[in-house]
Image 1 (tube, rainbow, N blue to C red):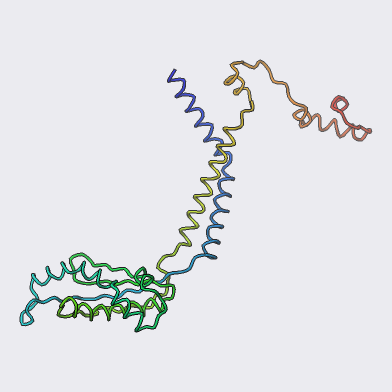
Image 2 (cartoon, rainbow, N blue to C red; image 1 turned 135 degrees about the vertical axis):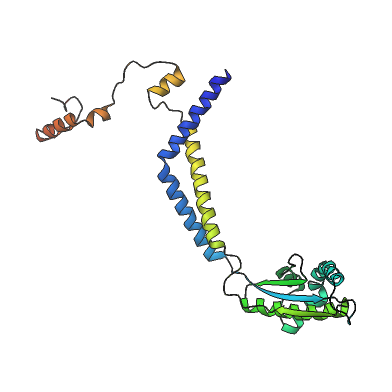
Length: 257
């Protein structure tokens, strides 16, 4: 019994595969249309976001008269998490907004800032994202300057140097155009496959001799062609032409001489 069910499932999957293969043009056009729609919607609605990065080097020397030791490096690494919190703290954000005279809330500015520390370094990377590439660069530089001053005064750091100032970005950080085109194409294929399978499974009409034997358990002995099949034969078409010339008005019996 289980073997019969397995065979039936395999046959159904095979039939569905051939149905999809027969409708490959539907899948192609569905993917094409949805991909175009995805690209158009992205172009009309997406607001490009630009990012600028500044880099700070933190020196936390325990004894000013001595050179940097491994202990200094270890202490600087332990303070990295403190730096991350300090960069997005209220005093720094307030000072940056005041210095640049930017009409933006502290929460909005904090949401545009991200901090990264490359592994086994004391380099602090501050990334600022904004819709305006020039503003992204200005904010990144100002945050670096104000953060450096706060680190020295609040955390008693010996020195914080700006290793690299931000650049004016020329390309958006996140380009969703190509991604949305691809997602649109995949979505179109998925929807069309689902629609084709649903229509196929919902169609319970008998289409051929195999369906009669499979679903009704009856072995057909012969086929009776429909009138449309007869009318499509060459002989009938030739006879119809002759009949029309003789004033034939219609009717299958009058078509064949």
